[in-house]
Amino acid sequence: MQATKTQPARGMRDFLPADVRRREYVIGVIKEVYEHYGFEPLETPAVEDIETLMGKYGEEGNQLIFKILKRGVHAGTGEADLALRYDLTVPLARVVAEYRDQLPKFFKRYQIQPVWRADRPARGRFREFYQCDVDVLGSRSTVVEAEICAAASEVLTKLGFNDFTIRLNHRQVLGGVLQSAGVPSDKHNAALVALDKLDKIGRDGVAKELSDRGIDEESRNRLLDFFVELNSLDHAAELALGEDVDKKRDSLNAAVLGRLVEFVRDNEPGAKGIDDLRSIMKFAAASGIAQRIQIDPSLARGLSYYTGAIMEIGVKDLSGSLGGGGRYDNLVGMFLGQDVPACGFSLGLERIIVVMTEREMFSAKLLSSPADVMVTVWNEGAVSESVLLATELRAAGLRVDLYPEADKLAKQFKYAASRGIPFVALLGEDERSRGDVSIKDMRSGEQLSVKREAVATTLRESL
Image (tube, rainbow, N blue to C red; front, side, top):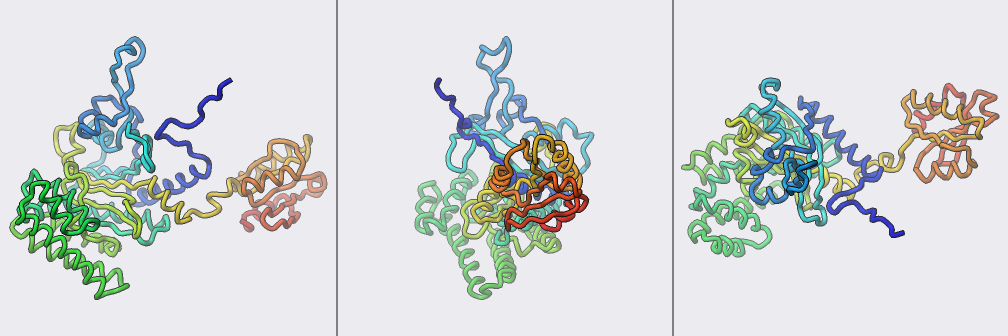
């Protein structure tokens, strides 16, 4: 008989116990921090009506939506009426429209659920993956941006990251810089794609790309002069303040804001964006996270999506980001026919887990020990006593594995060792007659006998 294929579908993954424990640990920290900031949990169905999703992500996004064919008598039509959710933002917009009378004036929600995209699978790119979104709806105050940055910063700090930076920019500042340089509005996206390569291909390379994209020489020079000067400000702060990261960042942020004011002086939306950045920095300072934030006028995210501040978290010496977001006042109200102020952030769960694994940031206990103690079974007649002991220890708050069969003790010890369980409890005939339990430390090999009522306390003190 031919063997059945056992690999998961392309772009999907199985998560073995150690993988699940890593994920649950990270998700647990995220939930705990977000709830400390007053965010409430939200869950939406994996499946949405197809018209809810179609047309919300652009032409490319429409092609990546997993469609579900009609069922029953309509199955032969090849038409779809449902689809797997593509992200968590469009379902949020639907929820706001459906339950607007039941939601608070300022709706603060977090949502951690899988999404699906019919993308081409590649290294680090999956068809099913989790998004960890946090959003505030109903307020245009820049306090919201500062709070979201503070929450994301606390998550990463609690997970053990200490070398991350929150890059901060503003959609209107970006537009103001480009317009002040003389770049036509219809070429803003093209210019930013080229500018994003400045560190990789240098000024001459970017100048050529800008030229190829139809941007005239005067505008090219003004734009490149501005961004090259910003790089020199960073270098100057590095030389002047050396290892003093906090002072260096304060000095650089002040210099960047000053240069932005000069450059976009005659651009009203750009000036408004600079005021927003100053306000965010003021509130971030009150939250104690200003030293984590770097104002970066070159940061560009989802230009057709974001309307105000944009943020991205990076870690030193690592490509890619650990999360990003921003203000998008024109999107969530799509089902209401009116704008709803909104600002959100998404942490990259998969990326965070990969980096933490590579850096060995997960505790050995989290990964190697599914239980604190394993209770052995002495013989068939002692099974009930072993079950009772396991029940008592669980009631005392311990994680307890119960060996399911009467087997040779050597095999039971070997099994406990293979699973990384640190202690084994033995309840033999002598122990039962004395009211004792023998506890073997699988790490040292030592064994001691304690009174049954003291087993839980002894184990807790030894863990």
